[in-house]
Image (cartoon, rainbow over all chains, first blue to last red):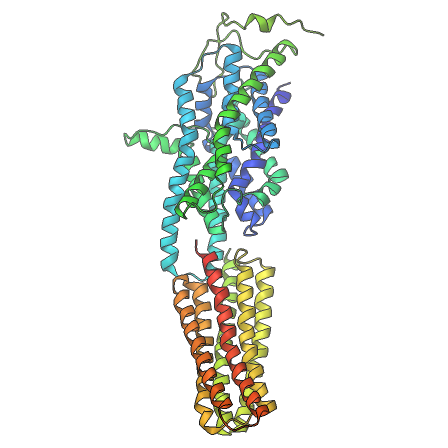
Length: 381
Length: 214
């Protein structure tokens, strides 16, 4: 049953791999600079690495928003996010996994009457706006730097082509690493509080924690999405908002990578703390929206010509539509799972927590009530 | 990755060699016209042969570069522009060869007092051709200076046209058979075409440069 419950998270991982790997390697593959097999191998390897090494930071933040502590609840929340993604993609609406999962968790909080930490929610929502803005700023700075260097360096077009290919592969690898580190929380974060896995001892002094096993599964699902479906996305990406050349793609992916890194890196957070500086919240941000922000920044600095403002408007609308839609689906699905399939979507014996550690299974009190209307539905066996 | 850099370097060298051949073609052409006007026909024919060889080498090199760029999927964004530039600069080389061949086959009788003007036309046309090669080299390495070289080409193309007009007016104002006049005009026109072709390359180049600027 555990494996069945995990399928919704794996489906979410698969769709993230299919969709978001195209953000990192799309233009490189679409323009023929990097072969798909090379891009897919690098992206898969580095997504797994990122998830395993630095995936815990953003997962903790999602845990603070809502610690879904029963496997059936986690399954339903991830399924709701996955369905939101597929339906909105089918309706050709721009959609972000981060917003879908946040909406689905809020749906769970709403259904189970668990408190929502407004401070955490505000922090998450603020990053939705901040991440494209920061990506835009980084893209402008990197663009101006590249322009200055390339104007002076007088590099032959063929050598520049070789450097650009190397750069796209390196930055693509870094981008995939940060995608894994930042977005694994979207895929497996809701399963962490209810994780059924126990630590597996590997060798002297080292073991594979239950959370890491979940992250590995999620990352493998992302890698499967990259291999099986991202090729067509990569062929299509890049020209929707603003036409990108390989060098511009390199700048955009670099800006996106920096943004995902600063919102995912536990190492950076520790370093800032050690220096006594304010820390940056570790929040899963939308890879697609960071890319859009970076492309928008370059479009602006190049004189706003050729920017697709209608698409940008639709993306902004997605910030509201996605979480609301996901929350509604999550609420409805939880109702069915609990009342029709008689599955426990929340541990009633646990202590209510708006803030829960990412690995430990949180507990809730017996007193937590489910709305009467939701429990009186007769179950047909 | 090291292999990619090595292959790129190899094609860089080949492109430079091709452009060297275009320059060499222009210089051979200018010298051959001088020999023709001086009546040193044996040296003229040797130069014609040398120009033919240069043109053939240029064709082979261009085809090799084109196939390498396609097979190795290099510079995907600019490949079309680069191949277009190579093909159209090869046309300039072909035009110089064809014009010299016409001198050899048709042996135009050019009045001696008009020789300096013919030399001027050839000189300006070859200058335009050299400016075109400089502009192409700049396109590959230094986009900022493409414009300067393109302006140089435009200047020499105009000078070629002016000298050609002067020549035609001089020819048609003197007592010659009409067939002779038309024959001479035809030669001025063909040398002018070298500069015109160079200008066409530069027009392509200006667009390609805008596309390449980040």
